[in-house]
Amino acid sequence: MLTEQVTAPVAWRAETLLSNEGLTSIDSACVDEIGAAAEILRANPLEVTALVPDDFDMPACRRMMAAVRRELDEGVGFAILDRLPLQELGRDESIGVYWLLVSMLGRTVAQKWNGLLLYDVTDTGEKDVVGRSVRGSKTNGGQGFHTDNSYNLPPEYVSLLCLETAMRGGVSGLVSFYTAHNELLARDPDLLARLYEPFYFERYGEFGPGESSISEKPIFSFDGGRLDVSLATGRVRAGYEVAGVEMDERARNALAALDEVLELPSLGKTFDFERGQIQVVNNRKLGHRRTAFEDWPEGERKRHLVRIWVRNEGRRFYSG
Image (cartoon, rainbow, N blue to C red):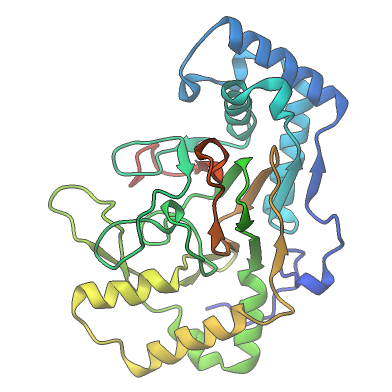
């Protein structure tokens, strides 16, 4: 267990962030390279997930993404790239260029057990109900702060490209779990210690034949040098329900304390995620979420994000 306060840049509060913290402008050199790449993609159709950066001459973009990775690993833990010119590029080429940029951060990996690499975040009309394997990303409901794939092997980075925004709502939020850890350490070290012990997690139906529908792991882990987080309190509570096991009082109190800290008004950053912007988050240091939203009546205007996961350990399979 980490027993010292974290003072690194990633331990930020909303009130300590500058207004443009984490914002990366896509400069003219990168825009030119992106335009040239889009022309190549138009002339040479290929599945997006088969594209590799080495096939394109994009040195300015490589420098930009190297700076983004430093921000993810050593800085505030997130970056917002502003922005791809969707109208000029076209939707298919925009997604292709987005794949190339994110692939410069590391190895893209499967986001579902069936091997899906490119994931559409859009409302399907379903509801997130325990045991039905409907991810919150496929609904229009609000979310709590979470890390993606908390119940299995979490990716290091989670990236989203905004193609369409909602008519109302869908406000994005980020929070530093390192700051939350600092708060809990100051308030109640014993409850914090419980978060280093295993919890049940529901696995959203993402597991192989014969495997369990729940996993067991801690929320916080510390290897003596790096603090990692796997968190989705809703999945934890669902995990106990699916397992038919009553959560012990210390575990309930620890989760409640964590929920309370994460909702402190001084902690989380909120922002409107705009068309063409790319958000990249260090998924083992920060939590992300969005508020509930209402879509446009026109189908082509429905809120639509495209998600990519990057993980440089294990194999590209969903389970690693």
